[in-house]
Length: 458
Ligand code: HEM
Image (tube, rainbow, N blue to C red; front, side, top):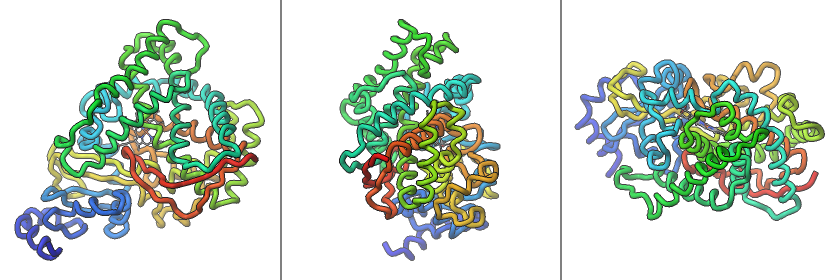
């Protein structure tokens, strides 16, 4: 149907409804509203960023005849994610991930349900968590060093899947004190593909069946984790530094199943995003030899002494490279929210269930805020840069904002910094192409595609 006919029909049927939204700019709706923009070839975060450039901080969208908003305005984003957060839920994300999670999942817990209780209980939210994190630098470094040594002088590899498996293994060591077996990784990936299919479904989820064998794989995935908890209860290791052992020592009455499920769900929440960040950083470093040289010399120094948290903290270039990759290529670029009841936002009435999309893609590169926004420049984080744009602030929110910000942000930062410093000290990662890579979307996270590289001994 020609565009003008489609627009005419929308106005014919919904013209009166549209009047209440006349104050807001946005693309012209056709008979499907403006949803077509999100069904085309452009990734959804690029659509949100384009709206930010074309329409400013608030863009009115139409999902069919239901109005919605794309937010690129820090003040409104703060309201939705923080000060007025009780008025919203995650909506479609809860439906997508529901079958893959359990009642212990913080990620999809209802804001107006048991989210706050789950968050208070989470092992990563305890007063002793920073102390536990500090104990992880050494085992993480060892695991990454083993990985690099095994790849030195080897074949060219596709970085995203290889670093994803490394990240998965390091998480296994940090959480359960052991490298997980291949079968656990295979179940994890199988389930993640199911989740990805649900994220990308173009029809209502009630018509998307779960694949054959789903229950079996799901039960096996969680059983690996409940078995770890059983074993740790039966034979406690007083000196073990993994999060499971530490939690059982600190909170002996933590219910077994809740603990197993909480820890197991850190894998899908953090493995894709953390490994995507490492790929982005290594790709940028290839194009910026000056930054790479700084990182290498600092990493060499870090790796020459005991792998303590204090020494990791002193490695400022390592931190700056991670922050700059999170700014330029944030692994999670789209946050969804929906009003729990009819309400008002940005001066317009929104019905319960309306779509609100928030992306960091535009604000992380806003030229009014960041000098040379498209340039990878880790040095911008020195001389007060970290304090000017702290994690979770208006123009830098790779982990989200407000009390519902990523539970694993600190853990992810320690892992990504340790991994980069360990890789850079032992190997020069030769990325084959400096061209921008294609960004896919997997399980809600950006997936770098076709970034091939080899690890060359320093
Ligand atoms: C670079 C790595 C990571 C990035 C960029 C990232 C990003 C995010 C973002 C943006 C959110 C908020 C989503 C929203 O508000 O809709 C989130 C939530 C969450 N993340 Fe992460 N994440 C990372 C690593 C991790 C890791 C390593 C873990 C676990 C160990 C983790 C666990 C969680 C959990 C449990 C939530 C839900 C928190 C809640 O609802 O209260 N993440 N993450």
